[in-house]
Image (cartoon, rainbow, N blue to C red):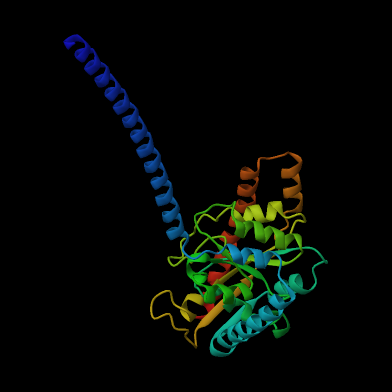
Amino acid sequence: AATTVVVATTTEIKAIVTVTKTTTAQTTSATSTNLHQNRQRQQQQQQQVAMGYNIDWIFQRLRYPSGLWYIASQIAITAVGLLAKFVLVFLNKTTVYNKERLLNVIAKRPAGVPLVTVSNHHSCFDDPGLWGVLPVKYVCNTFRIRWSMAAHDICFTNTLHSTFFMYGKCIPVVRGSGVYQHAIDLCIQKCALGHWVHVFPEGKVNMTKEEMRLKWGVGRIIYESPRIPIILPMWHEGMDEVLPNIEPYILNWGKKVTLNIGQPIDLHDFIQDLKDRKVPEPEARKLITDKIQDVFHHLRKETEELHKKRL
């Protein structure tokens, strides 16, 4: 009987150990799964915090704007265009060199040919401010004025701001997310429709005015556009005096602004050669961006000299 009890007890112990091991394994597995899920949730939460306001709905409306969208956009563009003209032309002393180059590519380029303008970025008022130099028939016309990328974490932080900038033909760009993002895709789509897209290839307000390496997003827009766009470089000085980059961020008057429109950059043969040789896309967009960088370097020096003569 004692032997039977011992055997039974040993068997029970083995069963308990087995159950314990199984339970422990299951618990460990469940714990591991929970930890993994928690990490995923934390990463998603961190991404949401980094992204801030959800901007997905904006892209849908900008890709396929309705008739009502154009009506609302016309109202916003007119209001902002008149403000830009009032500030830049009437409140401040703005001189534009080679203005006819900009007017010609806006008004006289062949139908279906896109326009990509590129400029330095010294102030948050660069866009829409610079377009105040244009005639009212352009600066107050939603069908003729540019599309422009704007920082999502500054201009698209809530529904009210997002709606306003969306109707102002601004495309939310997420800085640091690379060239393959919705903003760049949308710019390419607008180029495919023959529209005008403005790009600040420095990628941010350059408060120190150092010579920065240009972002390759502009190279991708130009390279992947179904029709090679007209590329028009611009450089300006004095916009950071009109709206300084320090608080209280108030528009000033009586300041001197110089805007210099460069020669159109003809990259047709260059881009066609890249495509014929099947140059990898990352290299192609870098080479295109480098071309713009070279033009910027010379246009900057020229504009700085013109601006100094006015001071």
